[in-house]
Image (cartoon, rainbow, N blue to C red):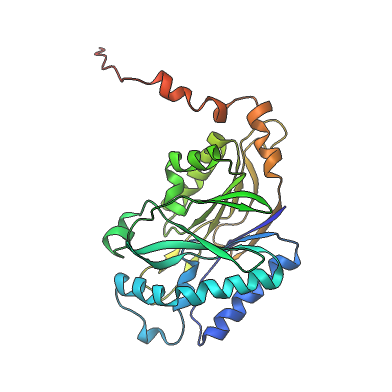
Length: 294
């Protein structure tokens, strides 16, 4: 299959139609190159609220979250229509979404038939908790598609191994990581976490980051990132575990032709057996013994 991962820069637009035209051009470009699955970053959905004059923009993070939640339904419908029009799967940029537990950060996943579902972010960053006043998501999804079983871990969620392990144990063929980090340190954490999850699960991990400066937007004023397609470094796979990658802060698609089943083949024929031997941690580590020394 061909996967297109976006390093995406949200921008202000005079009208909704202008923003939709930009998204359509991006989707057209990837679809014309044969992409089956398109992945936009975390908080790319903020562009749904970057309409009109920045002078009228919300002034606080909670106000931005509420403003974007009001646009969420139109945002997902735009992507669902594009997915159907071009016959592709699209992970739309995440944005705040209204749920019974409050506003959550959720990424819509749209199918070629126009249907869609959501993956909520389960573990929130301090900024999302303390400034945006978001609530954590409640459920980890495994999407059964014509391309295989696909999981999504939104940015910070990728830094917690047990979530990725739950997905691969349930049969995930690949895991997508839409991300948004404002400084190089954050981008490094997510990127290195993605590489670690690829090793642990002996599977394909794809990171799609937000990039660029957005003036007069409290919650994504600046972002940095680099697209990455990661696999376990093993027999028949890249020795550095990098299948493809983009340039840092270069807004563009990175498109790679990948075979998740072949990548997961390392679980049976690889030099190591991280996926198979995972459970041995529970058997080996029962206590931590304090040992005075020196």
